[in-house]
Length: 254
Image (tube, rainbow, N blue to C red; front, side, top):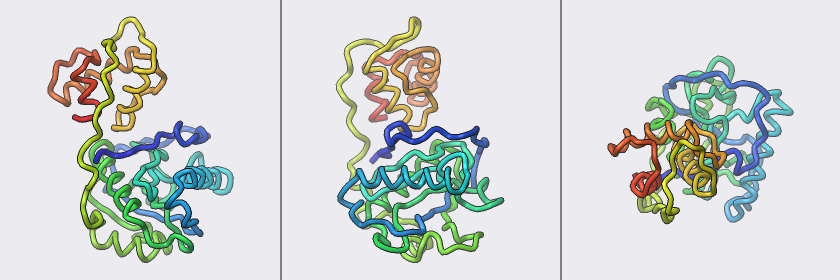
């Protein structure tokens, strides 16, 4: 299935306290765990996952003095991937001198409570890895945090899985392919002039989930048009910068 990305605004992330360092490409990904106790109740209550991610960000910013959460992405038991620092931004969690080598992906398991990663966490980590390879110029390496840094992270169960090559759990990608597109809103989205509406917001949100850098503000202006053109060229359709029925469908299913 396509990645189920929880954007920063959707988990009510705090704004970073400074500018990220550009990360052009990496060798791959390093996998992490929280290092603390994770309440097993998060497996049946996604709201607890959201609260945990927010608490991790607060600890990293207020306790460590970092500009933001230290991870690139966070994987939860519901097979959702939280956007942390995101694509092409230097993480902080891999260790001094090691952050430029790999994106940092956290699985929401710890050293007590929820220790063994549920299948949803493993799937979500793989979803994140495939996402940064496809959209973030990440290489093929999949390492644990302890590879190159003195730490127990990501814990024995998760590290054993990493050393096996981070395979998907038995049953593979049971999601059944990309999600179906919502009904076409009935009007063409184009610029000029700037167009506003929930249909614009819906399209922008999905494009952002797919890794395209654009503002999710409900305003279809020059930035949205230019992203649309690049997406259309990628999909092999007419690159006119207009979101019509075909481009709308490909936004979800292409």
